[in-house]
Image 1 (tube, one colour):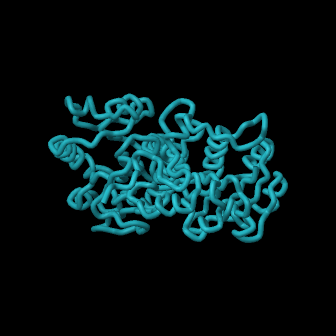
Image 2 (spheres, rainbow, N blue to C red):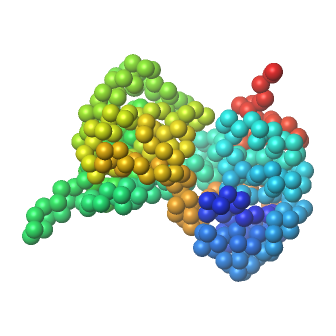
Image 3 (cartoon, rainbow, N blue to C red):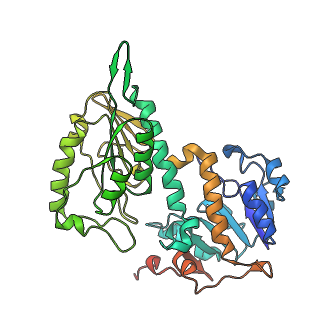
Length: 379
């Protein structure tokens, strides 16, 4: 059983799919592990660290992927990588499958068994594999750190002989994993924190972290959560009421962090241009949904823009901004997932295709797209 970890082809991707700790455990499961030279460099992991853990350091993509039974990557393999992966191999990555019909077709044509880590079901057994949570947690933390750096003022209340510095007011929009970590981080830094979300269950979570909950709490709000724990898309009427409440609140804030995403859909628009202009000069907005169109009307992907003195931060792939930590957690997610695909007694790949986790994450198998949510539409 051969496991391969290539260097990420995206020059802006600093994460890596395995660490020396997970390599050591894969070796213990009976795998021979090949890591492409330099794969971990941007995450502070040297080739020598992988070798000490039992991996072979391969020179180049061809040697890394040769005869691999399992290929682990951060991002979906591109066409050049797929051409070098043998048919029937298992490929595990963050596949970003929504709206990517051509890329999914390429995976199927390559004959690989592709598994999308972001499609894991929200069940107890899958918690240790939950890539979305591990990376969103770090993104929420980093969003507040980035906001503090752009804000240019102190966040906590400070009483000094020269006078009192008031605590910054921080508003978190969207209270999923990223939002909760943003609240916790902002509170630790001494800010006065408020938060909002359309799911009623989040109110107690927000208050448990010492923040104040802001929302229109009507009947629609009380039913605004799917069985999987995601936010439902709200009616236009509710959105209008919530926008009016939020507009008045945002005008008084120093920092706003937006985290609202609905899987497979464009990010909901939460902050209008008028709301941005209502904020005081020097205020900061961090839009964590900028990759999906943005929660803020004026945010731009991979840019920090200024609108009448208000900075709007649109960094892409925010977890990647703390790559060493992100790689550590992501690699552990992959290890937990791949362990379920291995027969530990015989030390070989043995996929149970009826497993709930396997069914939920498998995109392609035997040359076809098999996931029901991504079947090609009839012409």
